[in-house]
Length: 392
Image (cartoon, rainbow, N blue to C red; front, side, top):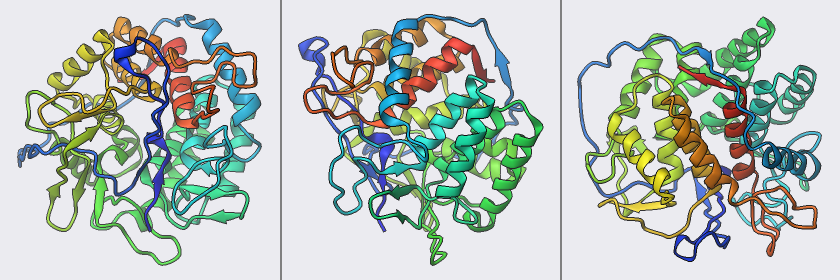
């Protein structure tokens, strides 16, 4: 079953027209090919040991106060529901595997849980986590999607969503939540790991496992804290080996074929997927400086585009709030507060100022298209920037 991945439904703006907000909705599934046609580097070298990932504190920064308040107000009033978060403010009809409208994604719930954890809202976190568990949990994993209108819980997961929920538990200071995260992982590994190998999804109804591994699904910092050393080292090597060999575009292949151990090749690469992979590597001190410097240059120039060709040229003129939010998180991991601030400014350029319920949200007021991933990823980046908590 093909799965729609909400995290790449993004808002776009056309750089050649200044800061005009024209919508470009990118829809991608688990089987979307988003990498370039450059052959990834192959290496069999041993992975150097890395230090344990722990949260560190830096001075709080209350910048973006008005924008933050408006965004949070919009999300709490219009998007966050009792049992989940709307994928889109506009209630589009569901067609096939496409996730939009008022469907719920465990991705969105995990991001909201991260917001509650980062801002230490203990009671709200507990209540929303238990509702998330009741709605999405399938015994060994979290379903990636729930359709309220038909009360349909889809049988497959996406490990990045499972890890995001586990990470939110690890971000809470109380020991009971750390234990809860370990309990979730113990069940997750029963079906989602075989011979220490992660996979893109498991069908909870049939036990069928995907034959691919999407690199950005591998949350290395969370896996390092919860998984075995063998599982972590194998996953780290597979992600590192997906680094593209082109000096013009030092990003990452989209996924690994587990049958022949080959990495996907395509005409263009999706920036959100590569940024998420880069962030995961940075959190365990395994990101190459070439990748970081490339991202930093694009952010500083305000030219972080949604897709790139194999030669490093922009394949579209669209940009997204979520991509800039991920770049801000990456900059904070690199302890570059100036670049983080610049990235957040670009993300917040999508914020709507309108005399309507959409005020404060990130999206397109004319079409009323407002996706949860852009808004929640930007909120988490702002939380991290304001609260001064990164992983190192």
